[in-house]
Amino acid sequence: MKVEPGFAEPERARIAALYWEAFGAKLGRVLGPRERALRFVAAALDPDHALCARDGAGQLMGVAGFKTARGALVTGDRAAMRSGYGRVGAAWRAGALALLQTDVDNRRFLVDGIFVAPEARGRGVGSRLIEALAQEARARGHAEIRLEVIDENPRARALYERRGFVAAGRRPLGPLRMIFGFRAATTMIRRIG
Image (cartoon, rainbow, N blue to C red; front, side, top):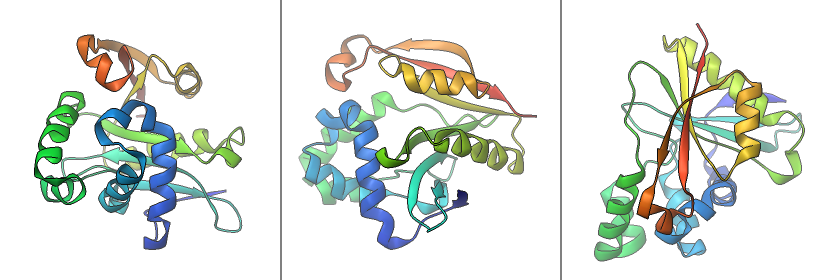
């Protein structure tokens, strides 16, 4: 298995589908319906904020996204949002997503999602992607990595804890849970320096 930065243009649809499989339950009410969301995500993916795991034959096994002051894995701006959802649809969707956004923490390297292809699960892909994120963070001068995991995803949280992350806080969603389908997100941090 090899982890490399970026992805090729023909991989956009596959990455969007894997992203939606991982995060669609959380984002479905805002970015759905599914087909429209897949088109939007595919167009909004930024290869400069992606690390991709591939097997020996070059097949995509998983993706780790990260966030910087210059963007994130899914960086749909207002124009892209309007193109995908229309003026009114873009306005309320952008507003709802803004409620979920976290800051760009200049002290810590921010993870913007990790997802693994179903056929590659249980093969250490998630762990390799986390270590690649740690290496990227070090190269950018960070001593810590930060991510958020929703309470309804205990398997992901267990993986993060095995890879050295510790819980640093919990953010309840309150009434927003009706929109996003989860009650709270836990911020987790891993020291790498």
